[in-house]
Image 1 (cartoon, helix red, strand yellow):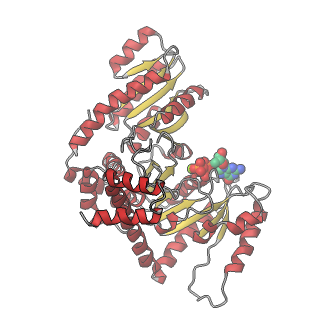
Image 2: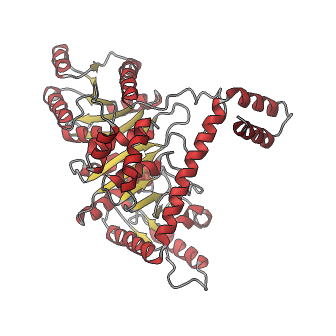
Image 3: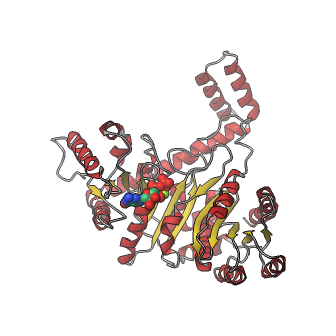
Length: 153
Length: 321
Ligand SMILES: Nc1nc2c(ncn2[C@@H]2O[C@H](COP(=O)(O)OP(=O)(O)OP(=O)(O)O)[C@@H](O)[C@H]2O)c(=O)[nH]1
Ligand SMILES: [Mg+2]
């Protein structure tokens, strides 16, 4: 149950692991990107709620609400992102989770990246970026968040 | 940035069944934050009615699929259903992939179905430290029944039986021969036994083995009002057995209430919750005195003291403070 040694590598971990929803919105049936993302976040010590393929904006928002995640990680190939992302941001706001940190991985043209960030997507990790960058990004941005949660209590 | 909520606001939110408030209260309890304790203190007097149903069985046995079907059956009767689905944390990184929700996505747009995934955080026994405490929040918010799906378990993880009113043990064909069936201590905790994946060719044989095992256990002097755990075969592919299963769960609840066993179980459940909390806090206090602990480990390493004597000394050091 509890690790007995103070020197154990397990005891230095926070009591509050990052909770992240990993979902693949849209209609194309490729979930490899989402699975790689889920795996990397899990290995980074995050708690990953994996809901897989074909997630509608409402499914994503409801999962974010009930699971009370800190982060929503979306895997997106290409094409529908300019309609999907606004719909997802709206759905999150509708359930009162506009505060969730939204990140995305996938191929998105630079011009669209700017627009998506204006919508509130925190960061987009293109094909050239390392998963480690996404992990670091989440760590930095949720560290601040959980501090706020702590003094709220 | 999230808005701050006072404990009163959050407790009122929980009692009013507000989804966001329930979700936040669960996080606070899971993370053992003072906010969680405050909310629980306020809502706990309003709990005690919900039927807590444990679902346990080996990894991949079909537990989540089963819960999904049970949601359907209870929703048809208009119930507000909550699910607490536990999956294992990695012993190395502490991370977890929580993948039970994916089997229950069809209810995503249904405000009266609340599915919450929870990592075991290495608690052991197929459970998480705060399992029942989180279930109280659902209870306070008006959810009834509350399903608790354990981590995929082996032969020895029976803790769920002391945290639920009714325990459903899921068995699945193809995991071994009759010897595994005989060995499984987990069977004994089942108020209801499910043979899942009934569409598989060897399901009938498994059900037969289980039935034989049950007659062995039957004692001739058993009182008339004893509960005899039914064996129910289900198949998600053929959509069979789930009505029978939910009927069996409902009649178990009736039996609990009529026989007076309900109160006995509730007492066990709460006692278990309290003692698991006490154990954890004692452990924390011992660990916080790392000097003592290191000294004790060193003495045992040098074979100057036995592990049992070292444990005694650590416990004494707590009471001598
Ligand atoms: N043939 C058949 N397959 C099933 C049935 N029920 C579930 N499965 C399959 O079994 C696999 C595991 O199902 P889950 O419901 O996730 O099982 P679980 O016990 O919750 O798994 P863990 O939570 O990982 O331990 C999935 O691929 C399901 O599609 C069934 O009745 N028949
Ligand atoms: Mg499952």
